[in-house]
Length: 157
Image (cartoon, helix red, strand yellow):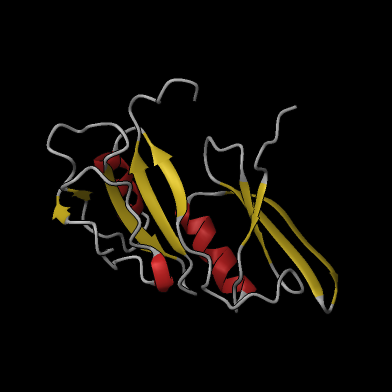
């Protein structure tokens, strides 16, 4: 039996502002339905992704901006960063961990936080090792996204 992650609910405070941001980001708008005054669903899919995001009125009681560690996987981290900057998105500088640890600085809603066992170094991984280079950005509410460069998948993936 396959279990496929299909949809992630994002908590936002202003649906139209979030919609504008994700359009600017280049995500595909799949649905924008208002069912009544209390319920509106806005559904986007990142380019090339099998998983989508949804937000709106009446979608969740979770605090806006509390979704953290939302990973977007890219083949070329530098190119992806430049594309987002060209779209007007504020993206961090490229970085990597000195010890090769999976980036986990998205605790507590701060996508620039460095965990205790992590030494964040500037720039992409010097050998551009797969799974090792990152950049971060946030939507207007502070939901935190991580770009991760993966050039070769681990076996079984």
